[in-house]
Image: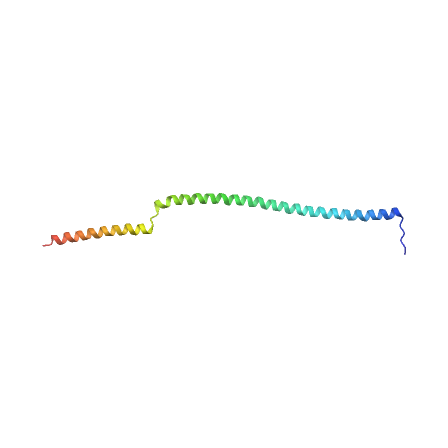
Length: 112
């Protein structure tokens, strides 16, 4: 079986095959382009969400810093260190012991 083609038929067949490959390549390129565009849009949406989340966290961090500064300002007014409490308590107990000792001496002096 022999197939004979004239020149114009061979050229038309070749152009048809090349046109089919060209169309197939364009379809594949458009699908890849659409896929890349969708991925870029997803990344952009993710970046926007991340940016808003970071902004919220920054605002909360600023509030936390303000609260911490307020606490640091009021803490010395409301808090007594353990050493200071012990020193004050020791001073008070020493004064009470002195008063008790003075009362004992007065009680002994009044006893005949």
